[in-house]
Image (cartoon, rainbow, N blue to C red; front, side, top):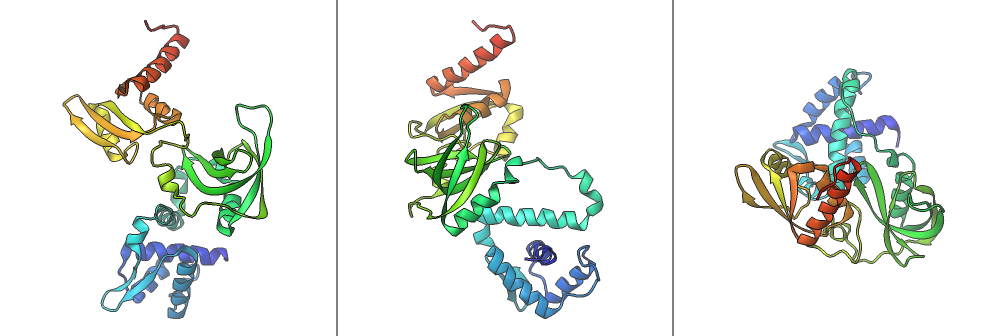
Length: 304
């Protein structure tokens, strides 16, 4: 796909998504004012329909026409339930805004995601083509690297790192591998990818926070006490889909979760410092307390 056409598709999706329903005449007027329209020419009807068909083939986004109103995204409701395509729409919208306001690019800052630069495209292509891969991987906790055949099932972004959940033929189970410096190499094989037709990525991670999963970790009810001035942050961006507000007081609130008490979740709790307290279960509360005790000792303040 030529770069200039890709930018046109981005612009057209975003314009209809933000302004639709919108007539073709109005789309053409908007296009004449667009910063990516170098010659300022109107958008020809034939070109528009070619773009519309290409957008559906490439992105799965359907642009249809209501004769009395104009063009709109027909499967908008489906997109809202599709995390990938919803993320795509939001990313395209931001990309379009940046193209329209190039003089502001140095005033809009993003978090860098190093793991997306080398291996992400390779894994996506293998998943798309239904192929297994050969991975060479070196854990941060081991001195030696290992090479094995794996079947990539899904990808997950967590805290600026991309991870792939892949079935390892050596381990005979699905495992998480980071696409950062731990991944030494990936080669796409001719071997057909094996994955259960019942596998659902969202369900697989539904009882966990982050990417650490394990058969030995069972979901349970966890209650957190959150100081009042942190409550709005929790309400606006829940830690987990199971988050439920069970108590509300002037100086604190209590949230309940149903998930496994993984390392990632414990780290998230500790990140909030004294503003968040584990109330239950008791064994998880004591585990967090032990970490706090060890942290205090490192600063020369033993807890009795």
